[in-house]
Image 1 (cartoon, rainbow, N blue to C red):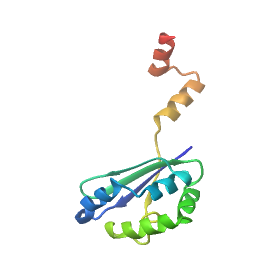
Image 2 (image 1 turned 90 degrees about the vertical axis):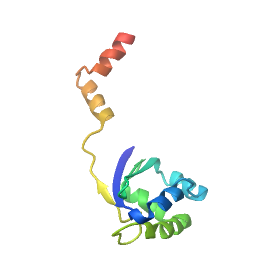
Image 3 (image 1 turned 60 degrees about the vertical axis):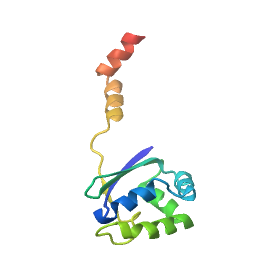
Image 4 (image 1 turned 180 degrees about the horizontal axis):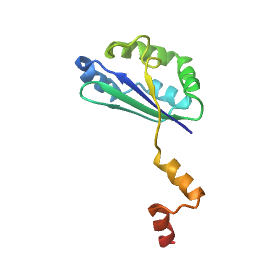
Length: 129
């Protein structure tokens, strides 16, 4: 599963309404995201409007975006969400800045175990056996 993280900027003047809309996303939109392979999807926002999104998908980012672009509900959702963002050209789902992952705990623990390096986690597991 591939991990994707992105950044957008919500206009702070619209932040409360943005949060309200995301507290009850349309069921049709939720179903479309799931069917398009967007898993473990989360959005985090700071009081100044900095928005960080994270999701996992079996394919590439472009494939995940294309799968959603092919749905009617996504076009309607993006049109409704666009006014909430500051300095955005295009729709929110294509205008985000992708962030590069530089560390993932489970990957490094797995790599360490494969290399025969003992970690506190592997020491605890063998002590419990």
